[in-house]
Length: 122
Image 1 (spheres, one colour):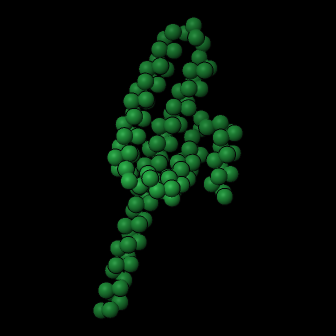
Image 2 (spheres, rainbow, N blue to C red; image 1 turned 90 degrees about the horizontal axis):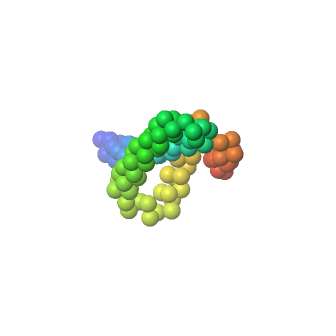
Image 3 (cartoon, one colour; image 1 turned 180 degrees about the horizontal axis):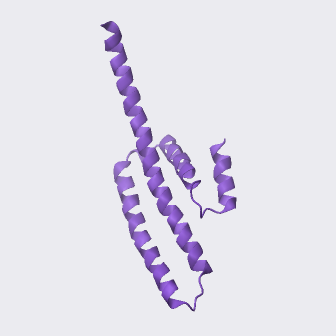
C-alpha cells in the first residue's frame, strides 16, 4: 500500500513532465516546418527568372500565405508559452528543439546545418 502511495505521484510527475517536453518538441517542429518552407520559397524566388511573371506571382502568393500561417503559429506559441518565454532555460530548450527540427529541412544551407549540428552536440 505504501509503495502505491509513493509510486503514483512519481509516475504522475514523470508523465506530466514528458508530455510537456513532447508538446514543446511538437511546437518547435511546427515552427521549424514553417521556417523550412520559407527558406524553400526564398530559394525558389532567387532562382526564378524575373521575366517569368507567372512563376514570380505564384511564388509571391505562396510566400504571402506562409507569412499568414507563420503569424498564426507565432501568435499561438506566444499565447501558449507566454510566461515560460521569460525563462532562459525554456528558451534554451525550445531553441535546441527548433534546431533539431530544422536539421530535417532539405532547404537548409550546409553552413547553417553545420552550425546547428555543432550547437546540438555541445
